[in-house]
Length: 77
Image (cartoon, rainbow, N blue to C red; front, top):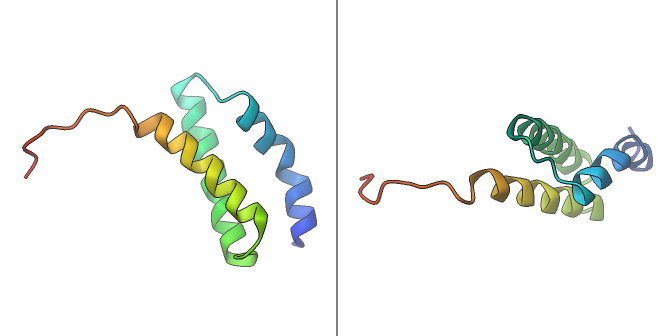
């Protein structure tokens, strides 16, 4: 798939996630999975593209939203 078609197919979903991040944990996990899938595709076929950096940034924000406040034991080792 050409990069322009890839962007056209997915842009609305990316913008929606950026403007209104999901509050529901299951929905957030689903959107994160979709973004990571798109990121893998983008890194494979368009590794130096701006869209790859954009998707990576969006996936990073959702990742931090999911795992950023997770408490861990201090003596895990």
